[in-house]
Image 1 (cartoon, rainbow, N blue to C red):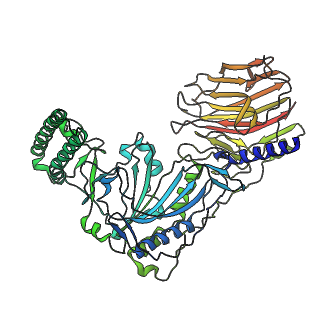
Image 2 (cartoon, helix red, strand yellow):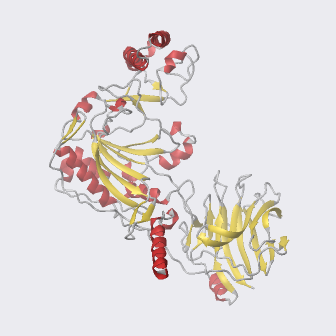
Image 3 (spheres, rainbow, N blue to C red):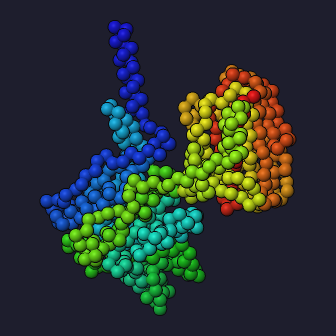
Length: 618
């Protein structure tokens, strides 16, 4: 019986472990692929959703789009699936989208939070993931103007870079207008409604004639005038239904509504008078306008009140669908194709999907297939680049210095990055992407010999070839350079030695964060330690001066040296001892992890260069 209990316990432990979500960093370099490659063959039955009827031809276009997506992208760092889709069914909260044309297509979702099932097969742990969508006759969602849209016409805005918190930084990453594969087409970025990030869009339409038509001031004011009585009647109906049987409350709330409505009408009249001679100009409004603006006397085309001077900063155009094209959307032929995907630059799985789309997906073929079919007649879809493409890694000969130092019996580890080509990721190292989606790269510096790894807002630059654990007693050193005019107050370069219980989980650590001074002044070091078991060892934070490390020279170079001798810790900058702590680290403790981190970079000169990392056994 005891043996059976132990066996059952072991099985439960295994089952529990398999059910646990796998850390994302463990999967980010893994090409996991699709749940299933479908090879859709076309549909045989039409589909009706609300009052929209989707023909066999329309739905079969969704099959083609799904197949082309799977042919162009193999998910990495996540598990992919592809689904066919049509316009969202109308419900209680999306009636304002009823005036949008019928849309159909497909979307691919890459699930990035995974776990193993009972058969040790990877499955999604949650429904969260990143999405790539290709839809015929679609409109970017989320910015419909609820107060004005009707079953006959939907009005919407498309707030872009100007609506983000850091327009220039966002534009640097998401502006696709110079991407070679996309240059012939309309591309734009739209801010998401409830978040600071956004979605990339590519619009394929005949002769680049957009179906999204900008409204003039005169058109917008007329729409407002037509909408006011409808809104008033709906609000009045809601009051009567809510206060049914209580005439006193009905009279009170309807009276309050009447007063608001009179303000709306009066302020609309004032707005029309103000812009009477400018009705042909493009209407610029707030990204999410509300009918309540008219109640307060705000100018619908400006940031102030009707009587204030005009200010249109941050204002965006308002759009509708070309009515002729909207009617043609009911036919079997798409009037336009909207390709969309959202991603963040420092997420490896999302960035990989983005790069697959802009480099692999054959936008020209899709455009020609729908809008110039003779060019691709009888030609099957082929991606521009294989989805299994891998960039070639340039491996160069190790430097003579590297060969000599590595051959020394006392050398436990050495790296001068001499085997990696310039501009490439360091071979044998991994790091997190920075906010611009960039890896650490190898560089050369004027006035300095050898190769250097540049770290600019990258976390966890970690050597994958480091032997573990480190020796009990050792000397560790590395050369560090800060460029001229390094950003004053910029973030430190943190070097950490850890004893980890699992990757990323440090039980004990030594962390030394260094940054340069300004205009010839000394730099500073923050030394953080955690050695709590057994008690009595160094734990806490200490500050030390880093002599001679500033930002006024072309290359501000120092050598950082760390010595562990039994329980004693010594730290040197060049030949200057800046710190010594007795009973700092338990003598028997063996470090098993090493990393460099620069948490973020706020300027072009806020970066560091590292080389000649050496560990010797003492």
